Image (cartoon, rainbow, N blue to C red; front, side, top):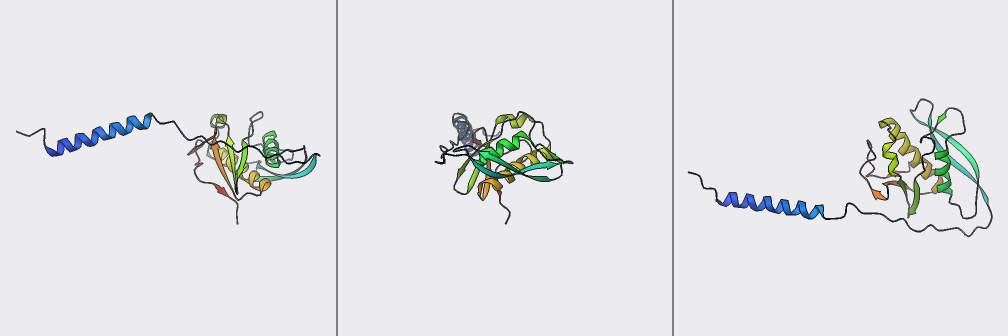
Length: 180
């Protein structure tokens, strides 16, 4: 007859109970770390100024990008990068370019920390219904636009203020860096 209270069975039961305790403790932790963007630094400029923005849109067959240069007038204290993202959400003005976002979709919020630009994507971006190609055009179009208009070296994505592993198909874990 086998012994049920052997040393191996007791050790296994102890490991099982420790695992259950760890699972219970982990479920009581907050769901994720929230990143609070720094307060925007408003430039002391009192007059509007001209800016030449570089905007990356999808090309007609959605296989690459079309660069659109757009001259805009920035208001006093208006951030160049925030305006570039707003213009990107507004859509292209040149022929042969397609919008990255549907009409009315909000642009991501942007903030800087050192040589990194953080783009905080609204949670509604998960419901856009893009496939892999559309999602890669969206993320790289946003990153290219941010890099071209900020002087930063890399772009990191957040989703609703939190680090996310993926939007739907593509990873958001690693930054997109400026080409060297």
